[in-house]
Length: 89
Image 1 (tube, rainbow, N blue to C red):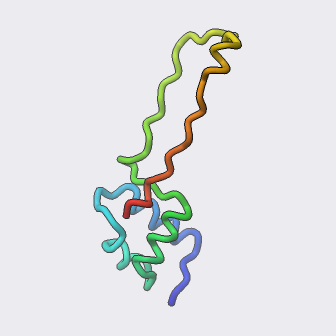
Image 2: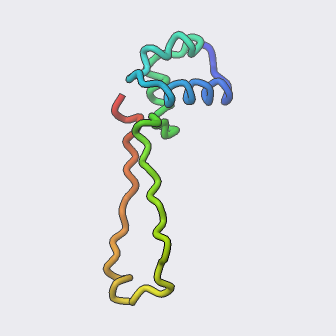
Image 3: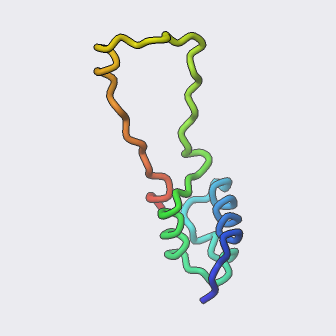
């Protein structure tokens, strides 16, 4: 079985992320003998994410208070990053 270079993987990632097609079956032809399962595993491990599924960047408010009251700062909950892009395929 052929091994892909880092540049080959980056090209496949770009093609997949910019495409509206789901899954990895259609990408196998461009993968030089790499299986759909191998592509799927690599995509999960390297965080591939469709452009349409990537979270939108929130705009920063124009004016922010310089100091947050201590009580309010303690009540702010940390949110976990949802890493689910390539796990659904």
